[in-house]
Length: 225
Image (cartoon, rainbow, N blue to C red; front, side, top):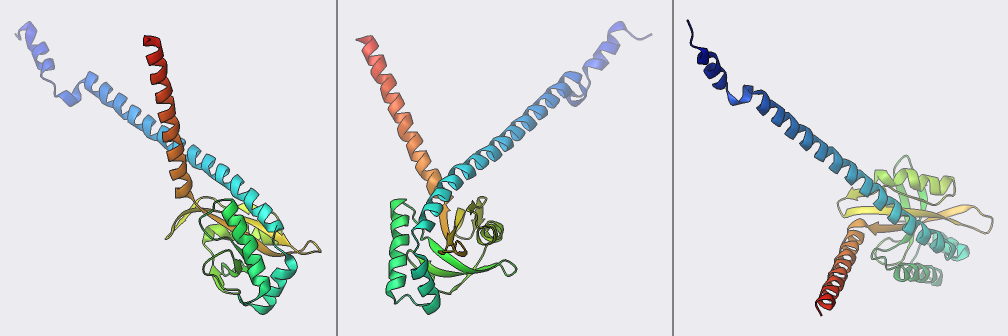
């Protein structure tokens, strides 16, 4: 006959991983970890969407305004001569440089013509600064093709999703440039490096945090007085 405590002793010797309490605890930890991961993923996607909308709207306004400052006749002269050594090119470039500087955009802005969606290519015409000679081919990242196509074919200002290439993380806005008859003959391209915006926002948040801490310390000092 087995002693009364034998069964209890055998039960007590169950491996840890077979105990109900241990299994419940692990299940709880796994569910918590999954919840944290899903929450982080949703938060990241929300932040990226908000960032795209914020920057996209800002660049869209810059592109729309800038497109109105491009003289159609001067731009047509540049297209006809395909040279930077002309008064027409210099005048259009000066207008683009002013747009770039007034809006504190670090990368050059430029006009595009000769859009070819099938070959994912357009052509530079006038740039605010730097490279990009009139008529020079501009290979397009895949993310640029659809919004640029809409700007050329539908005559609407658009902006891209946030995209990445070998030069960094970007968002780009396009605005159609029209002639006197209202026909789209070129598109203004405004690129913005997303890292710059994130760095500036980080500096602003740090400054705001420091200001709040200083205010709290001043209140605390006043209370002690």
